[in-house]
Amino acid sequence: MSNKTKLVPVPVHTAETVVIEIPEIAESKWDEARKFIDASGRFERCKLFSQAMAGMHLRDIQRELGLGRGGDRRGGGSNGQNGRLNFAALVEEKAGIGARTATRLMEMGDQLRKRLKKLPELSGVEIDRAAIGELSEPQVKALEAGVRRLTDDRTQQQLLAELGLYKAGQSAAPGGSRDGGSGSGGSDRSPEHAATTAKEIAAADWTALDLMLRGYGDKFLVLPDADVTVQIAALEIALKARQKWLSKPRAQRDPQTLSAWLNGQLTGKDTAASEA
Image 1: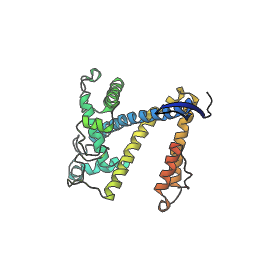
Image 2: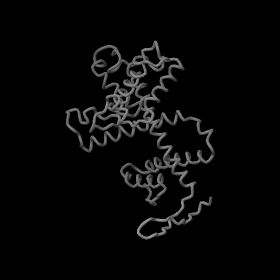
Image 3: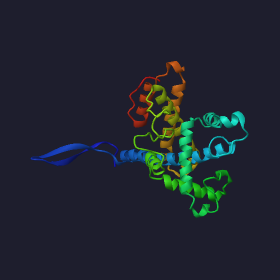
Image 4: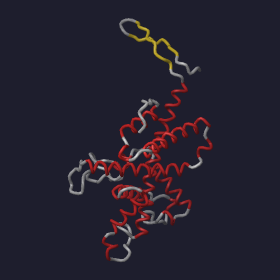
């Protein structure tokens, strides 16, 4: 079929028979749209799985360090008193996410571990306490398969609700407090709070994406060249957006201009925005 647009008559049943001509879109164009829709769905599913696994690994690290909940604090004095603060600083330095985001990811992982206790492959293992690094390779694969099964075909809000970590009216994003507000119990809608939340969500989403890309590895080798080319184009857009953002001093950067450019690139509706 030619990729050129064709016009086909379509009967419309009204009081009078009217023939309206509408464009016949080449099937290859629908294929391109479906490809990105499918990719978006795969990313969302992998994102939730990656967040859950990241939470489990963070909990293991917290326990190994003996900081905060889930492990005996090493020694006393300031280290014991400031265990939570120390872990918050470490997780921000090493993983690039805030303490609230890390806490939500770990809570997600904790609840999923409890639901995997009855897996035959994990019998004899205190999976809610055992570090992933202490499991055998078949046990790790069973754990990951179980997490994937529990997170598959669910939105983040649905999963957190099932795990008892989400209430109506509360942000489902990792890092959202259980009462949906600030530590004082009221809803904090200040610009500072919004900026902090946006930063934590961006960092958590990148952690999930980073894990997904590492897990994807060389899977592209089995794909047709056309699919690999689409992947390269998407990655190049993501790379160029970051390069454009860093190419100017921070005081001269315009988030709205760059967002407009990026959206135009991703949707194919490039508005020829000025350089960000």
